[in-house]
Length: 355
Image (cartoon, rainbow, N blue to C red; front, side, top):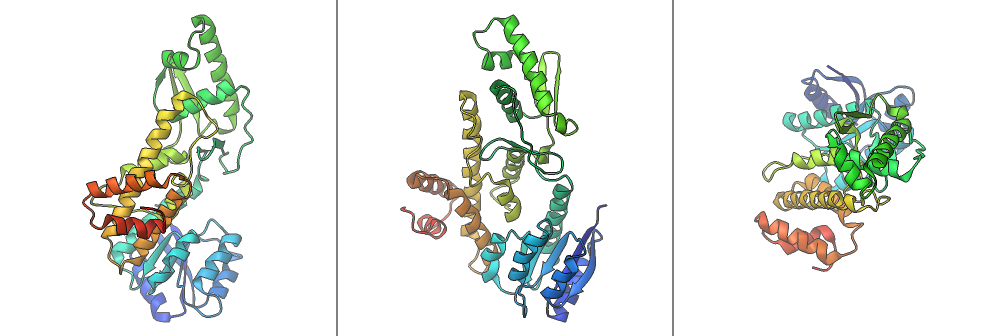
């Protein structure tokens, strides 16, 4: 089992003790140090690496939010979880890309979700993040997370790669590729060009040959990619987990995907890309409707959840020019879920946009 190393920061001794007792019930977590002020913790982290930090917010000299802001510049891969008795800091905490926001007294069941998120995030970090992003344009990264300066030998090679990427881990028949990209060509010449294109794609992907592989055989072409290394695959998996009755989400994970607030593959203009774009937009709509439903059903006291919802909805609407379409989609979706006071919910989340 992988172990998470964490430190605790709180100016109250009892709070440190309570948090240590809860974390002690998770064998995968190791508390390596505790601090009663953030400055000492910051100095410690200048020479030590950990997976996560549990930090109070209201502390003397350097408060938790200021500490997290400074830590982002020092070591951006450390995951910060805020523990506080005050819900009003939630929006600022999420804007600082915190992993989670826990209200004191922290409950064991709630902590288990936080640990699961941190373990997932640590796994993602150990594989250096995404290999392929599709927002807003196609970007490819090496296994260390550095952007590759990809120079496609031909535009057709890039197009065929994108097409296979959209059908990742699925066998695509040769005839379909020939119909999509070489319609009207002599079959012999088209087959030869497809063979050359596959060769060029493999040459381009050579730095990632152990991560992304283009396999051919029996007239089938399959682009094998890891599930959690491609942004839109992660997003589809995220949406598929959401149900009407159980919605749990990690704000940082969602925002890291960058899909909610962006268009996808704007550098590809072929006709065959449109069904994919439509599918992503529909998934966004469904996801946001569930988020808004969660917001509407949360009590006023649950400000942490409501703040998270507001932040995600803000990402969603920032790149959409047609307000009326957004509002009508949300109204229709919330109505189908039986939410009362729909206009008020939308007004709260969208601000002064016209209803």
